[in-house]
Length: 92
Image (cartoon, rainbow, N blue to C red; front, side, top):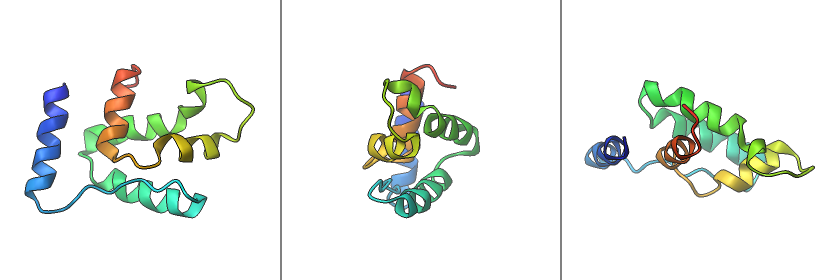
């Protein structure tokens, strides 16, 4: 599976388009960049990406705002990074 993700990354690089980096600096920037990053993925990985963004609250126990936690957790990651992390945590 890891090789598939690497192959996907190489395929994106070959297209000349750099993958979108998620910006967690504000709710607006996060919403915009996660939507763009989601489009970088093949359709089969988009559900995993969506699930990873929604399950960030289960990563640690805190009374924090789950949206703020998602912005902090995924800031600086690409969609491929998010999917790899989700697979490592058992999210399909």
